[in-house]
Length: 197
Image (cartoon, rainbow, N blue to C red; front, side, top):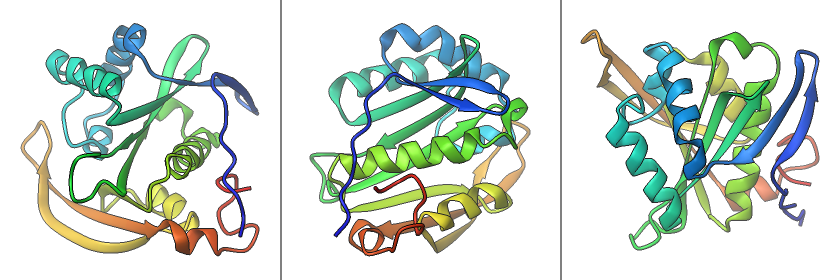
């Protein structure tokens, strides 16, 4: 069986578009993450269950990081947050073995490989936390993001019609993908690039 390699943060990664830093989010990042959220397109925010532009939502997020029920990984380029990957779990519920991965990146870094790298990093981090099952949710039209998670072993499990309503009042369908970690650990090399070594 392949082993999970825990990465240390912060760490720098080089892309054709330049270097980025992956680092764990903490209280000192609240203003920078708020700026990142305010620059996101409305549709991009539908990857997340709450409007992180709201200061009270961002503050609650920071508190949950402090409690350990959320782990968030930031992508920083030129001292600006351009992406965030979050693993959410509820350690006192019946589903303590399950984690939800949420990722979102700035539109100006799409197509550079940063989004794929962030998804791989968040996936690797979730596996290193000992979670047995992982899920992701996104609008059904986010085909590139769906493809990234399918390459990691996730499979579509549910379609929730008209599940979210954007700030303009338009409804969107949500697709739920999931994977059992034991199934991913059986993959041959190349099955989940960069996630398990």
